[in-house]
Amino acid sequence: MTTRRTLVKSVAAAGIAAMGLGLASVAVAEELDTIKEKGVLRIAMSGAYPPFNFVNDQNEVVGFDPAIGVEIAKRMGLEAEIITTNWDGIIGGLLANKYDAIVGSMTITEERDEVVDFVGPYYTTKRAIFTKPGSEFTSIDQLGDAEVGVTLGETHEEWARERGWSVRTYKGLPELLLELENGRVDVIVNDSIAAILAMGEKGQEFETIEFETEEFGAGIAIREGNPALAAEMQAALDAMMEDGTYVDIAMEWIGADIR
Image (cartoon, rainbow, N blue to C red; front, side, top):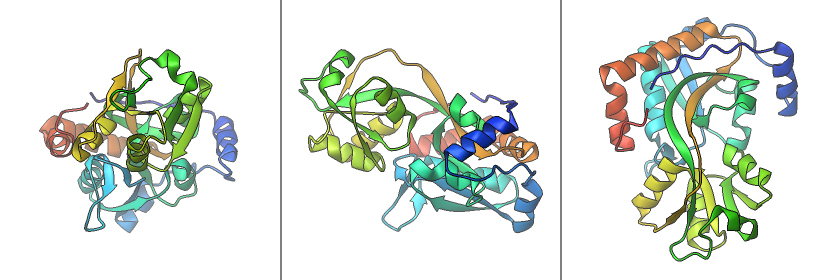
């Protein structure tokens, strides 16, 4: 599923959102030419979200997200530089020009749309709640009495806090799964695909709590005011989806077409 996004935003609104992140300004100049002069597209992700992005035994950042980012850069005639950073500050780093794009399984939300532009979405997933087998927590209505684990800065954190739950935050999915396994949290809230695949990889048993939830898209975030960069990245993504490259990457890392 490829969705072209036309984002019309107020510079004032973006400025307010940026100041909320502790930043002084938002980039407004078109940057594609500068990136092409350097020959490198700097791509950020957490490196702590297997199998979408993680650090392997050779200390390389691998997974679905870097593979997508590298392929987009290649089709633009660029090298890709993968940068890992803490998720809760990743948008701030983008606005501070520490990298050019975030290809890190970022959910497209209205709040984020006020600060950055998105290319994509490049995959879809759903929110899910996981417990250990035999847990006393079997319904979403019981979670007011539970310790709920989430990744710091993800949309799931805000969603859980809005419900008044007792929330504990962690740096990434591996730590989150370990806390659930060791019983330091009763449930975790995460993207369904990533958590199920990561638990399957490590042989961790789990149960899910059923509740109504909608699919959401993960997009590639870039600084505002860069329509040429957005268009070229979107064209590269569209071409990948049309010629089968996207499916090859998805099957390698996820085992399914997740558009």
